Length: 305
Image (cartoon, rainbow, N blue to C red; front, side, top):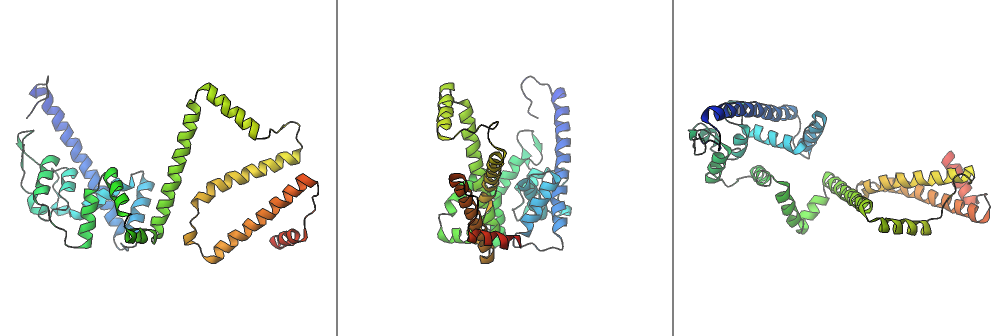
């Protein structure tokens, strides 16, 4: 066994034994979580996003990362319980998961030059997997191999960016309702992050710059004396603020491609009502006339009914 500099064999061996014991316990938990997903899916459909939905919901409800749990599931279904080795870590099983001869291959321990022992390590498993690289023969094998190869987020993102340059790929992606939702959610989260970064930059800006921004804001935004302003004006401004905040939160979540014409019409009717109310408000503030026109009165009467 190779020893770190400054360690004796007597010091190092107990540490290695304890580490191997912990890895064995961890591997048992990883397989157990993978088997949990397999059991959850047993007797239920496994197409049209059902597997992804089950894994995502289960992961969030048990406090796990969905992609990590998906990896446990993928490895568990490739290794039936009677084909696994308790003394070989989960990572080795995962590395060999798509090697067709894995059930025979794992029976024999390879030589590990680091420890000087005959035992399975991830490094030796990767060597064996590369030597036994098979050509996928069906769609499921191709998808599984692709997921395995694109394990890192960086690699997966690069491939996705390349793939969406193909018109047919783009068409198939946007035709899927869940894919559209995820893309919108990612875009929303991206701009939220951009806003946070801009806010942080503003907070770190030199005092002179911050004062200039504040002066500019004071010049462009009319000041309101909240102590002297009438109560109805304060209530009106508060209603506008609540309206603005609500719309800013809700509008980025809209996905009109999935709405029926009836749904869109209902929303646009309310937009029209809001616009008429704003016109009424503007007229009342600028002219002093608070009576509403006949069209607005009829509209509000219909709304009340």
